Length: 413
Image (cartoon, rainbow, N blue to C red; front, side):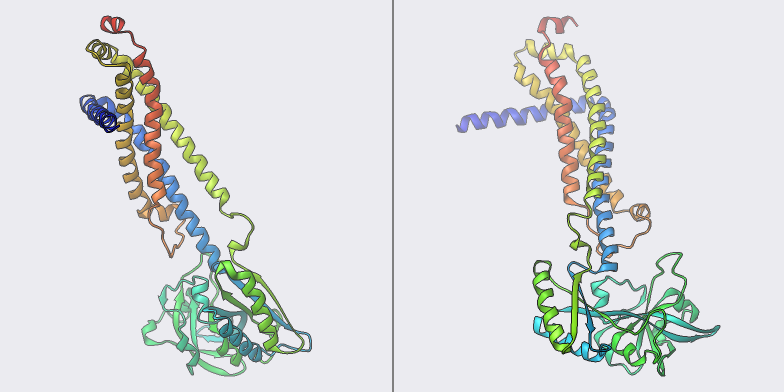
């Protein structure tokens, strides 16, 4: 058994060495024939890698809107009259402590008047708690997001958009720029962060305000468009227990608010959608990859057949000196496999450089990716495996043709 295994290993190594020698001798022909394979593998690996990055960009975009998996939103109502926001907030915090939830935020919308140099404006305010930034991947271009200590400030902290910052004259945040807020009373607020522009439509001033600060500042007369401020209550919990935790939190929250309270709950993150929301993207990437692979294989088969035709005399001489049909078959096949393996490694290397370059960000339209994935290992493995598979398939037909060559005819060729 050991001798048989040693013999097989020896034959394999000898054939690989012989294939490398043939590739060296015919390096001009090999180079031309394998450029297409390297390009196809590069395109294949780049498509797979770009697909993974595009998927991550899509996930992060959805997480900015709906929250990370699993984000649960609870809405509280009172059937006996207006909901007491402060009482509901205390019941919410108590329910969170009892269920050991680490990330949660009250979320709502409101408006406060801000006197700018060119006149006063009612600025839309998104009302949140500090954990909202982590739960929704809020990007801050200048300064910082809210910290827990900001809830205790006498001067409320603000995170504003670029349009708001521009109206202030873009002051350095290190100087703690102050802006007046007008609601039920007038207070000075401090800008601690600036979110980057979301696009050409993001031209109106807006801001993030902490919930407790806004509840104390909200106008006595509710905005006729927005109505009375009533926040939603969001929490970020493990996906595996989201349903059970949501049901338990609903009951605990409702009990804490008191008689006449009703609490509804649902998930807002993309992972709550039935099936894989990225399946169309994955199928598209797989389809493009298969087409690229087939085109590379077709070109290599054509070149390999022509090559074997030019080597008929050489094959005949080898057969006349005792080379078996199996040895000739394996030799021709391994020439193709070894060559495409090298081409695959080169193609994957070029693909890695392309995927990690700024060109990828430009191709994705400048999308911000917070957790940029590394070059997918599966993309490299698929690329090299595809190269070897193409080499094996492309070398199979020429190898069969080489075996069928009659020695006497080959010598006379």
